[in-house]
Image 1 (cartoon, rainbow, N blue to C red):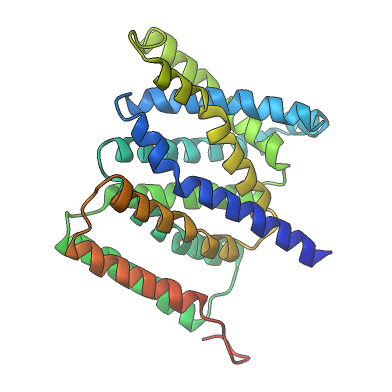
Image 2 (image 1 turned 90 degrees about the vertical axis):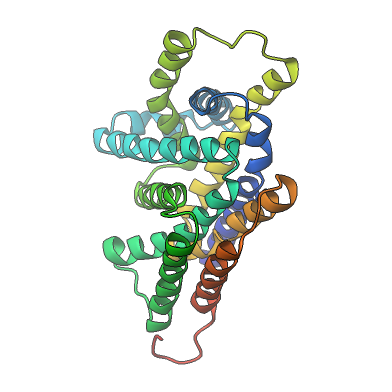
Length: 290
């Protein structure tokens, strides 16, 4: 039974990371729209789609005890803030030709997740795995000293998603019900922005753009629901390791589809990080860690 639960979690996480890896194409197509506006549409669309999906699956009963639990509601508010920061920075980065730096952030994230698991959840790391963390830190340091300076986009994305993953791992809540509550926390801010700041839809917005914005709901809700489902069934270290699929796809999209330049500094940075990934993932052959 435990094996089947882990397998279902792994499949869900795989689907989420593949979707997120391809997101650069979607958000680049919306590059002419300000990032806060795209974020507002993601929030509203995600909330509506999550509610529809929850109703279709007969999950409203899962929502009632959650709404009466103040502690879980507040923690989901914190996870909502973390994912909103992550969404907004990613949309902004892709629109400004920094999708490659964004992919670097998601390469860093799994090691942030591993460290959070070690420091806050007591998940153990071997000496070999600590070496993997050090290699990733070396790669980031090289980017700082030989690239374009501190990769703020990458670091914000890594930390915000690391905190989000930690919170969703530790909040005992069904995936879809939790997602609906998360997006509900953000809906008032999204409405205030669209109505008070933007004054509604931008004039002259074409049909193609409106159609893309209409997809914001499923584009947002489906991978998040899959991720939450997987995070509850896998260790934080396992979900962090699987996450490397996401930035790999993002990097390929940035370079080969969006035309961003892969520099020598990027090559050294990514090589150090890939080496860290390989070292972390390498199966241990002995009884003792490391």
